[in-house]
Structure formats: C-alpha cells, structure tokens
Image 1: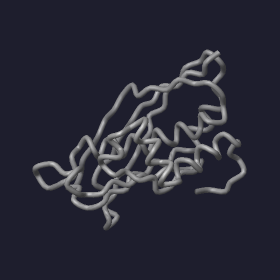
Image 2: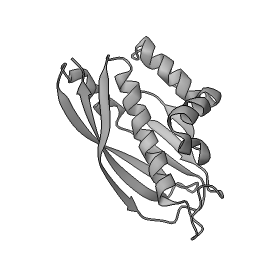
Image 3: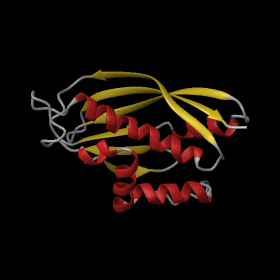
Length: 165
C-alpha cells in the first residue's frame, strides 16, 4: 500500500480496504464471489499500479492442467477495475462499464500468476479532466506473469467512464 498523500481521504480509505485481506475477502464475497472461489488476492494497489494474484489449484484449473481462461480474465479485470475505483473514489459520482475486452495468451499458466496494470497516472489524469455529464474511455493493459517472471497473458480491457451531473 502506498502512503502517498496525493490520494484523497476517500481513495485512501478504498486503498486500505482493498489491501486488507479480511475486508477484501468480504467485499469480494458481496460484490464478486468468483474472486473468492478462485482465491484472487490484492497484492498491491496505489495511484501508479495494481497487482492481483491468482493461484494455480483445483478451483482455477481447467482439464488441460492450466488456469482456466475465465479465471485469468477475472484476475486481469480486477487489476484494472480496482485501479479505476481508486481513481474514481476521489472524484464524486461516476458510472463505469467494461465495453471491450481482448486477450492474448502466450504461455501455459500452471503456477501462481500475478496480473499488473501500470496505467494509474494515465487513468487519474483522464478522470480528473472529465467534466460532469461527459463520457470517456480508456483501454487498460494488464500483463500476467508466472513465478519465473515469464509473461503468460496480456489483457486489454476498455472501460467507459461517465461523470454524473
């Protein structure tokens, strides 16, 4: 967790909740129960980047002895979505929605995978510039790496944001 003072009190509270394993577990139970089933973990969240891990075990595994593509997608989406929520936490009422999704798989995911999105600055600048009633989009890139630091997948998730009037 970052101790950077550029985050608003609301964003700091969101960051603290998401980085607390117990509170994260309950939040996911209420909002995204598959994250609990797949044992997703928030590894890091600050205004620069977000990292989420997913283990390789029986609940995330497919019949081919690798992590199921949907489980990988869930971890990647959370690495971008949590960063979005952090950026929105300091800016009032917004709506956000995934409007496009693309994935590229490059290596078998048969160990714990860490997904990282490093577009925090770009996202915060975009959200800060959005006026009430305006809508904008951002394609966020999350890279999944195995325990040997080898890339296994890349996800491109396009989010739409609308600042409510």
